[in-house]
Amino acid sequence: MVNSLCRAILRLVAVETERHRAYKLGGMIGIGALLLACGTVRVAVAQDTVPTDAELRSAYCIPVLQSEIKMLSDAVASMDRWRSQNDQSFQQNPLSPDVQNQLRENQKQYLESTEKVREGIARRKSTLNRLQAYLLPRLMHLDPMAIALATKRGDADVQGLHDMSHRCGSQCGISDQIGGPDPDDKAKACFASCSDKDLVARLKACSTPTWLPF
Image (cartoon, rainbow, N blue to C red; front, top):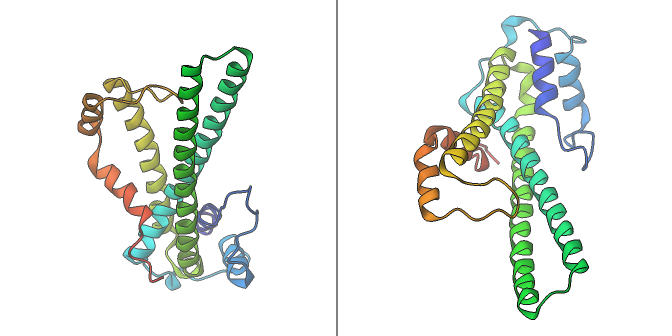
């Protein structure tokens, strides 16, 4: 049980390494939780409390948001590489006025798209910090198995979404390549009918955790 709680805490307090390596809540709360989880401090099983619905939902959503942040960050990096490759190609070949106008329009759309993605990343990071700040101080008193199972369910649903997206994209002829054609209305309707609506709703709820007190 101690090992399960240790793994759960380490999983729940992980943050993006490019920002900082230490969890910013800091202080003795984070250190004490880690020491407790890894066995330095022993807590009787009778002291474990059954997590509330809000605590379980927070444990579920933390790995979901971590995955979304990574996925969106990877998407921005891929878009930047795609843009750089196209810029180099255009520089090596003379462009007609019409192509130059189209290139400027594409550049404008690209900047708007990447800005929206970056805003989405920032919102998810803020929500992730709220969930971690809410759940971390409570972990030392909660049933570790219940928290670990909720976290595992979040990981499983993230994988389920990836599998669903790949399956439905292939079935509906939607390309996942950067710079690929936008899906038409028929393809969008196909994807919507193929999707697992309950799965999508569970994951989407993590972006707006209305159960948090702050």
